[in-house]
Image 1 (cartoon, rainbow, N blue to C red):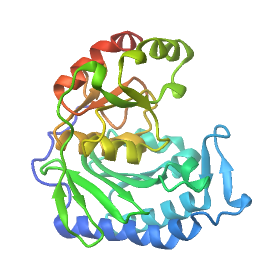
Image 2: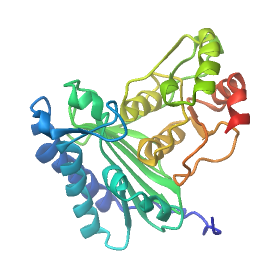
Image 3: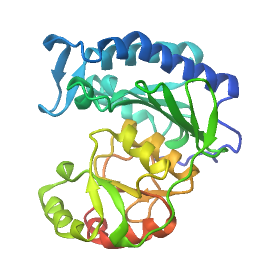
Image 4: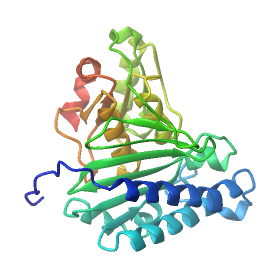
Length: 289
């Protein structure tokens, strides 16, 4: 990776641009996502890597609409969408060098969406040279969102535009921690290691939806999230939302997270103390990453 320029101290988007982005996401949800919820025909659901990695007509149509809107508003920006990457993986190579990059997951939680479960969301991250500088996670069902940038605390914004600050949970002992672990996506040896260590924790699970997992972490309902499946559209926004709500996010070996990373284990936690506790408990993963 080439040397990066210093991170800007100003907000990545003006308030008007942020409002424009939110309106674009809402329009895409109303036009392309919600009308297809629980109305998909079998021909509108496809698979990518396996039967658990689904893509629907809502994913492709919403991403196309959001991409068009971003390219019109920010013609010099790199736009990286999950579905576009599935057709052209080389798009990922531009993230580390892009001065302004939008990363889109149009329907995060596609499996839930395709099965009729109302647990999915739209994720948008803005990055500069691989570093997340704006994160937004929108819930089309509730028509609300959480959002932040690198100069502001994370906030919850309702459908009427009202905002309230959000905070991650207070620190707890290891045996009281609740978190999300994406164990089924780990290599077999690491899966075995994880299952041998999770018993001490109060709760571990997954929602099949990074959007709502990060929302619950950033709003204080959960304590940590650990993943070795580093799709940038799943994590770049949530990492920033967690950090700006009072938490800590970094690779489990302590190195900084970067949206251009494609391997390793990413740990996001409600506080530095919880991050240290979970990282220490799963320290064996760091030696493998």
